[in-house]
Length: 68
Image (tube, rainbow, N blue to C red; front, top):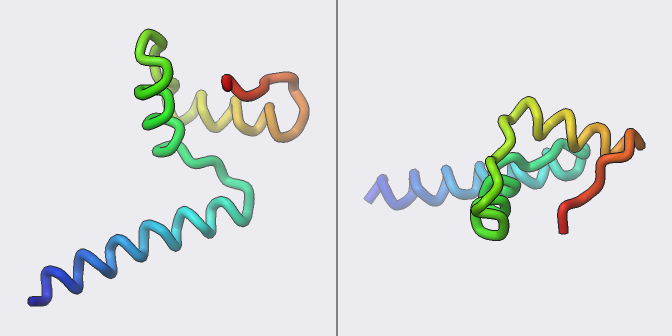
């Protein structure tokens, strides 16, 4: 009984966290990893640190852009 409620609360928490990160402009690493594995399986997936740097550069104008 409580496991279903706990799962719902955990899922809601993940969505809320993702929404909060998007509202303040933090990149979604898990979304990137899913996209990279699905759309670019031949390329290595960036580490979180490399991904964060690339997104900051793209956002603040250091030239890097979107892959797709």
